Length: 459
Image (cartoon, rainbow, N blue to C red; front, side, top):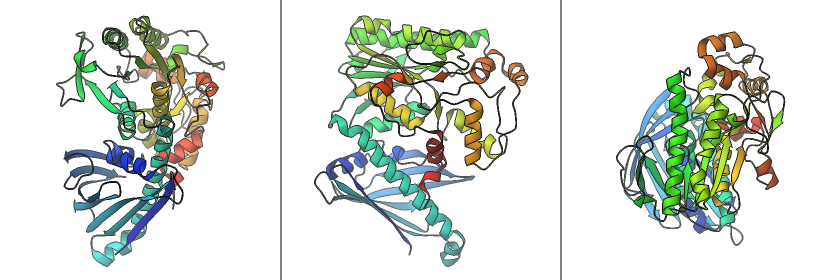
């Protein structure tokens, strides 16, 4: 029976390594971006014996349901996942946490015993593919674990209670598990009826928010807002986009003032700068022109009640977030893989990208830094054009990038939205973060895309 083993030394105590895996969100943080896996159901919490997870996994074009059960849990030392039903004839994954060779270090040891269906035929047909997939997956898991622990380590176990809006979105879906595995408590602000004590009701349109539930909260991270890139901008849709930012942020800022929440970390966007052409801008640059600039200005101004109350308010002007799991890249990858990549309009417009993990780290930095307020550009340090970005991604995919999307077609098909989102752009420098010595996990597009495509984790 095949056995796969991956072992890494990490510069954290064994107790910290174990605690990271035992907390909510570890499964979500350990899913490779090039594969999609969603927890459909869960019985029990954490990694205790008897806890079961039902997972729907998409591996390329294939979708499979997997039910796994935890057992063999020895607190501080190990736990085991066994497949109860799924694609393997047998699967048993033992997670071990060992003391490292020197004080303050640990060993992460993953061992998987598995058997493919159809016996020897299955091994002959798919054995190499499965072995390669396991190697890439566990190389990623160990790298992600080490990187996340390194981000939390400087704060010495300092744990906060954080309320988050937009927790189910692209950024929120990555940020919340990052925070919970780091020992923070997350309260999700939801528009439906809350399910449990860690969900709070809010309704920006109705001006309703659970003030009692915000008592004792250390910070609010505000990510919610109408998607600006979905379809044409009718006057009604533009009004909804403005209202979603203005009303939601103002309601939160007023709640911060009433309850005394000390920190408000709010998303904004690089659209604040309008179309910058060839000019490079940073946080000291003035407000640009256009609807997106107006939206961002209103968005940031709506936080004034919190500022007036003495809260620390920071606004992350987020660029184009790169993730194979969603957002712009999630939509474009199938097009690029099919050979349809190319310049949009001239291709010379600025494309201020940032990797999803770096957005998570930036929000965490804003949360934990006691002296940082005001606008902060949440973009990668690399300054590139749309055409350059497309060429580089298509090059990694071994696909051409010469299929143009003419400006006339963009204007005809998408109107003002297409002009401001696709044909215009920004060349943005993250001067505030650079001045503070912030380090990016993925400072270059090559590193970001090799991570997303799994190319960085080959056997």
